Amino acid sequence: MKVRMTMIALCIALSSPALSSADAKSDASETEKKSDAAKKAKAPKRTGMPKFKPTNEGSPMTRLGGATRGNIGTVARAEALVPEEIGHTLEAQPVLYWYLSETTDDRIDFALIGVDPINPMLEITLEGPFEPGIQRLRTADLGATLEPGVSYQWFIRVIPNPEQRLYDRVVGGGIERLEKSAELQARLDAAQPEDAHYVLAEAGIWYDALDGLSAQIESSPDDASLRAQRADLFEQVGLEKLN
Image 1 (cartoon, rainbow, N blue to C red):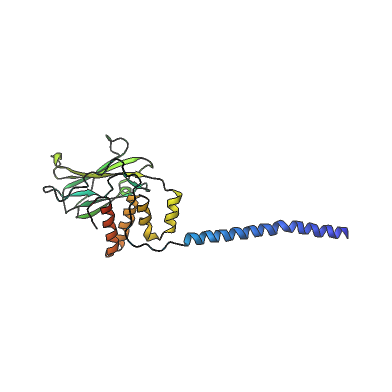
Image 2 (cartoon, rainbow, N blue to C red):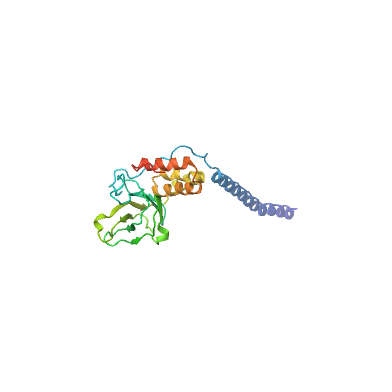
């Protein structure tokens, strides 16, 4: 009898951890399901204008030529579509935007300057001809990569006469790559994909907010609300209300 009772107790003791382990796995599974559900739960789609909130107000101005209005002589007006202070990106190879007032056959150069202003890290002549409107420049196509925490300056130079560089028209802006915080990632995860530019603008990430919005405009060129949002973003940083 004692032997039987001992065997029963031993069986119970051996089976208890297994039951406990199964319960733990079940609890973990439920936690994972809740976590996945939370990730899938997106905020309602936003309406209205995105609000750009720079995190470096009062910093030195890096925008060059942004206040120009109208053409200068026979040279097409160019404008860097950037804030007055240095703009931020999360991308190693961001997309830059600039504006050209009219069609031109003039030579147009692009330069990216890093820590050493005497030796640009990139300086090339862009391929024309150039049509009027908002221009896009992918740094990935140019083989340029930004290091986090480093301030850069980029320039567009319109060159009507390569023999007389006095007539060059130069515009540009500052850019700095930031590391994405866990908080910002959580906010992006919670937003609708088409609303990511709202979150980025509120976080002061100018270049990525503008690129995300511009990509939507390219996909839906007849959507007047998207164009109005971009025009409003430009106006918020003191640029002409382009759309």
